Length: 120
Image 1 (cartoon, rainbow, N blue to C red):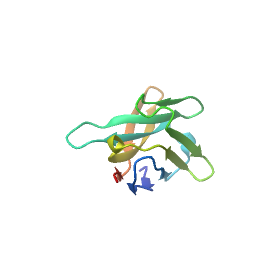
Image 2: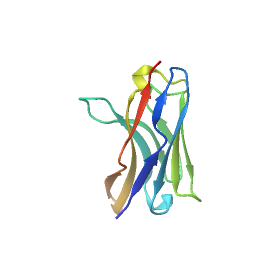
Image 3: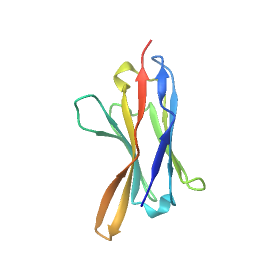
Image 4: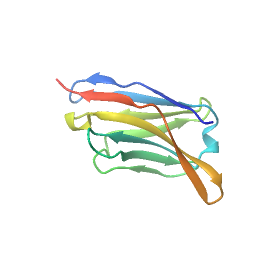
């Protein structure tokens, strides 16, 4: 069973920065992709940023130029560096792994979530 453990959330002032971390229980190379989602109260989770196993990254328009996803394969860890934070970034952030089952099938594994609050 894959486990994802997140850390790094908290309270920050507008314009500030936070770095979220997600440690996986096995090699990041075993996943098709890693990503970060966020969920606002009463809303569905939305994709913030994602990174494929060997390639490209994706960012939601709302965070482009402010957030950066990165991976440390030696530590089985994915990061989300968040800069120039805005109050509208306040949400619960979830780490996600796309776990392959077959060459054409995969499932989502989620972390427990970490609260990010941007407020003065």
